[in-house]
Length: 108
Image (tube, rainbow, N blue to C red; front, side, top):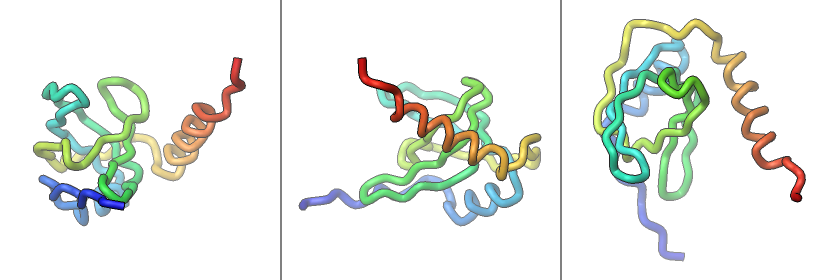
């Protein structure tokens, strides 16, 4: 198949992974699906690598919910000194449970 390579990221993914380890918050400028500009403070808990896109899995303070942020849509990121109050070891299983529930609903 003809795959489009990943777009270069506007942020340092090594630093993002380090921020996940120290549970540091990120303030991002993000373009959504419709190209609208958005500013969010997120608690990154994982990075997912796919063939043509990378995602940061995070708790979004604005939406008060887990969200996936495509790294090619992040225009800028501030690595905040503030850490998030809940441990990554608690957030990851909560996110996984939420993901499982999305796909295990019975068909009507």
